[in-house]
Length: 468
Image 1: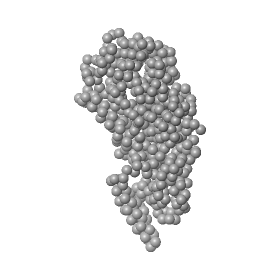
Image 2: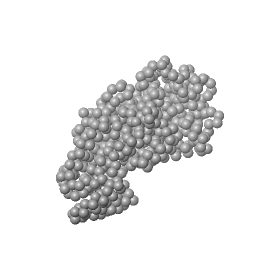
Image 3: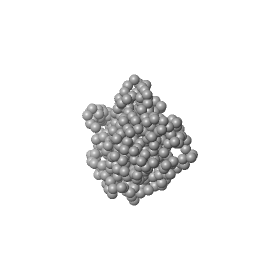
Image 4: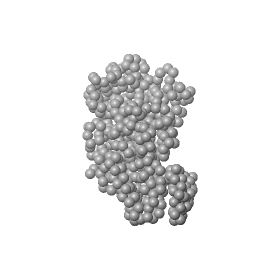
């Protein structure tokens, strides 16, 4: 079965038909860097990282571009609030985004352009839209440039709305607009704005509107037509609707498929930057292992809303701990080997609109079979199961034996110390059992359990793993 994906624009699952056979081009909207990323932001990064990994495993060459919006009203406001240059605020939070990519095992994009780096392309695009009758400079001398939504009959097609039913765009005051629903392509420089936050144009100094930048970046780095445009579902309107309209109006075919992931909610409400520091990626990974957080963010179908709670996060960590426990026990018995081919059932699930929950069900089945082989002492069988499980985990970015997660260094030294201590206690326990001193044997087991170590007695001896 060819890879199929739900297309938000057509509202149906469609087979992916790349513009260039054998190659897939993807653009997804990155962070507006007025603050560090929380786990709601990073769910999108994990979703598109899994998509990329699966397409590459399927033999396709993938180019993936994710922008950084480094100029915006909110960034300027943060700079004023903190008494710092706006660009310093943006850069600090851009670095926090990269740290979140790394800590959750996301492969960096093929390219990650900044909005401030494509201003010439934005000016050219505005000139094209004005010449075609789809944009205009405000007559009030503000330097603003707006897209004329009524000039584009298809406006609203992505979100399924009609112009007459829409509210006014909130990106600028309505005074300079022909219609309150027209949206800003460019914002004229205002008194009090930093001079560094403006660029010269034929209509006066100013800075980009939010929507124009993504159209310019996608066209520059992926071409006028590319395969997949994505982002969080909250971007479908107005951001992606506006991108689609301005790019098509400029004569560009733009994206073939629109892919949107659902939100990660907190108490039924969309997670936003107002949630506080406790749900920032940098804080959550202090409470749960980064690989377990990635499992939590990847495990649900990308189009399903995730209701966040500490309990569900802990349950996910426990579930992944069982998977990791098998991997480490099997590697200790049969050797780590290399990730193998994925089972056909796993591939079918991933090809069916990136159905990670169904793929995980296949993986869990192979973990169960692998544990049975370990119990039976079947080294060859356990090694084969390990290769299949590692192959599936590799696609999901969750292979605990990969260099991403098994980095060596101090962590490796600590693991060796823990191994030696636990094995020493297990030898004491075994000696006590052989001497029928069951009270001592039980006390040793209780000590290990209290320390977070699971013990499994098998015909080949005791196996242990760290609780998830």
